[in-house]
Each structure stands twice: as C-alpha cells, then as structure tokens.
Length: 466
Ligand code: MN
Ligand code: MN
Image (cartoon, rainbow, N blue to C red; front, side, top):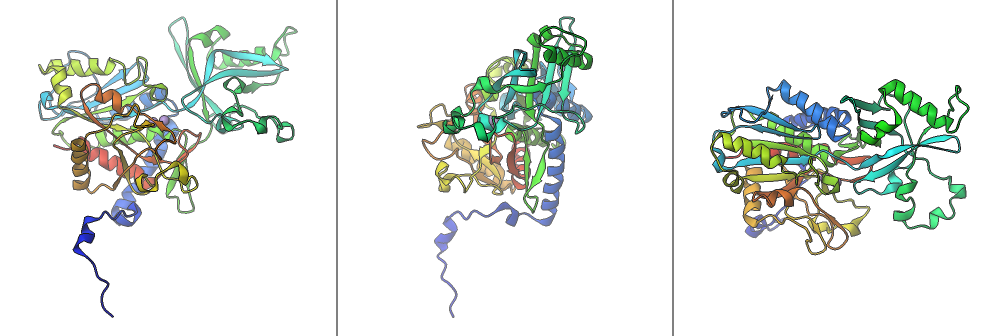
C-alpha cells in the first residue's frame, strides 16, 4: 500500500485544532490552577464596586500605589487610580518614553442585572415587594423564579455609605421575582418571548410578615423597613441615594463531567477583567512599554456616564501621567495600542442558525480576536485595521497562545458593541479580544477553562510586547 498523497500546498491551509489537544501537561496544570483563582474572583465580585474594591486589595498586595496628580514616576512604578469606586485604572510604567505609546488592556466590570428603582419598597396584598428596572440586555424570563442576592450601597445624608451584600451566606434568606403558575398562564404562554414579562412586572418579593406592633396600613412593608433599618441603619428616603441591585444567588461551578467549563454569573465581562489584571500583575520586571489595565463601568448600557469608557476620567488620568514626563497626551495616544477585552459569542451547535459556522469562535479553541462587532452591515463597529490584526497575530503566535478569530454571529441576526470604538475614537489603535461564552447575558454564563487561561496568556504577551 502506498502512502496517502500530500500536496505541499496543504501547508497553506489553516488546520484549527482543539486547544486541549495542543497544550502540554504542565500547561494543563497551570490552566487548572488559574481556573481556581478565577472562580474565587468571580464569586467575590458580583458588582462593579465589589470588583474595584477586591482588585485594589490584589493590587496593593503586589505593590501598586494610589496615583495622585503630580506624583513623580519612573520605569517600574506600579500605580492605580480608583474612579469613584466604580472603575479602576492600573499601570506599570515601562522603559520606553510615553511618546512611544502605551499598551492598554481594557475590560468592563458591570454585568446585566436587576437594579432597584429609586423608590422601590411597596406592599400589595400583604406581600412586600421591590420595584425594579433591569440593567443591560437581558431575556427577562431568565431572571424570574431564581434566587437573587441584593448588592450595592446606600449613601446617607450624613456622608456615610453603607455596603449591602444580602443573600450570599447559605443561611441567609434570598429574594425572588415570582412567576404565575402554568395552570393559570393561558394568556401569558401565548405572548412572544420578549413580552412574557414586561419590565414593570419584574417585582421582587421581599417579605410577608406584618409588623405586630402596629395597626396601620402596609404592615408588611413596615416590617421589612424595620429589618433594613436594623441591619443597615437606613430609612425609606435613603433609597433615593442608593445603588442597589439584584444578582443571581449562584456561585460558580465547574460544568461537564470532565469539569472542563465554568458556569457563573458575570463572566461578561469580569472574566476579561480578571485576565487583564492578572496579565498586568504577572509582568516580571519593567515592561518595554507602559502597560495599562482598564476596568470600566456602564459598558452594558452604552459606556456612558462618569465611570464609563466615554468619560474623560481616563484622558485626565493619562494626561496627568504624560504631563509628568513632558509628553503631550495626543502623541502618547497616537502611538498606543489597545486590546478591548470583552467576551465573544461562542458557537452553540443547538442554535446553528445564529452563527456562520465558518466564522465563529468555539469553546476550547482559545482566546478570541474580534476584528469588528456591530450590527447589520457592521453598523457601529470599530473595524480594526489589517495592519493591527497582523501585529496582534504575531504577538500571540510568538508566545504560543492558542487563539482564534471570534466574529459576532451570523450576518443580520443581531449584533452588539464594546468599548473598542470609544478607544479608537481617542486615536488609539484598538481591536476586540476575549473569551468565548455560551448563554451570554443570562444569569449563569458558561466558558471553558482553556479559553480563560489562553486569554490571560495572550494579554500577558500583548502587555509585555516590544
Ligand atoms: Mn461585555
Ligand atoms: Mn455584555
């Protein structure tokens, strides 16, 4: 029998291979260790504020110092800037001058959730409820009949800020948005999925026991308010100056008999936040370029506001640093490069029509690179240049990173955006990168450990590139 023929042209073709078939045993062990660290992070950080607080603890333990305007900096210095407790910039000053540009890795730390309205507490039929206003793009039916925790802050007129984290302890009660029983759901079941629940119907059940020391109206509401006063020292009007949010009362778990995947709330985009800060923290010595990590708020509602990526806060931070070295900000920006780290839509074979199989990211095929996002004819996309794509390919291949192209689904089925366009508008070359996810924006999203680890490895290679 003769050998099968093989044309030399075969080598011109790409032969994608599952990342789990490509890594060594020692790298597999690293990957598993990294997954354990990540699970601790994702279970600790359920909101943008909690992410900032926890990341500052991690940063300070590694020698990062709060940056104050005018501070003298030199190569090797490690700094962070806390933007109002809701966004965080970190940097390691590099060897090269800032007019040669900085390398930026940016992720967002807000996730879809159910916010409380500003006057949330009411009573109806001897139940107490919270009125809510959902945050970000969700399928509302996902968030009904699942246990919910309450997280956030209440700022009081005396200047104190009370932290709320209720329902995390397994012995603590949880809150829930109840559904109508199937037996009486004839009308509801005929509605299109987007209308099964209206936003105004997402009222969270928060109590049913009346106050026993009162004969007036709304005794259940009164009893709930008493409990909140006892626990947090707040009164009803304090809800007007609060940021309280309901998130799934579910911690991360390994998924699959092989434990190869991780399910958790808020992979989008705290998985990219974690890989970003770990990539920064694990830089040994002084990098060539100044390395900057951004953890920003409000991406899920358009990156607006003072803590979002559109805010001038970032420009101010960068300008202050540049000024210290006598470098104009615009010169720094025009030579800088940014990976906008956000999760990608992983191919799900149960919904093939939503994807183009030949142009889709797959779980276990590594870090995703997304040249453009957008909607209907690339609308709203920041389409990274061919030259930038080539630069990123080289960095990742030289570091043996398992990575893949990660376009956002089939043409004309939907779309989305990231902070990429906002960074590019600053005259910074930017491309999207991140971890492929299944069930994105659901209360419990799914990723693979291989992609998590490879995204970390890819970001580290990028931040330390010459
Ligand atoms: Mn995202
Ligand atoms: Mn998102």
